[in-house]
Image (cartoon, rainbow, N blue to C red):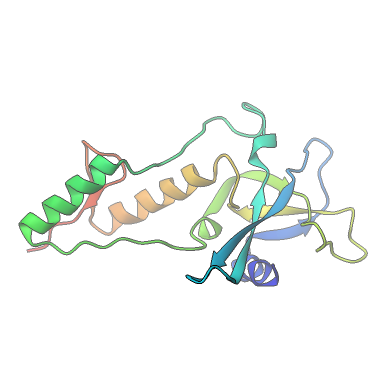
Length: 169
């Protein structure tokens, strides 16, 4: 848990603030992922702080729900096309991708359970960057990623959403 909080602080994901009167904070919770060895014993676990996005209200806390999911047909098409043409294929899996995406809206979250700041227990965190669990986190991240890839000369595939191609000669 301490490692996750260090990563959040290092990325300047939030800042301690007083909750404005017209706002309500979104709760947060710890989610654990247990890693098991092939022998069946627990190797270690990973903790992630997640916003309780299910408590957000449509029209109040967010306007659009967005979930980019890769379909197996799309993955097969991309792998087959790149193999046939002899292209290189790169796939990214970034552990803290959402924590690097600035938010466009003002969002406040409660302080994490068991990690409240002494003498500031009544304060909340104002998010400067997206946090896992927010309804708008994936859409915000995708919008930023799209903008960066287009600036780097990639073209967005018109047939399959989320696929980018860059041809170099």
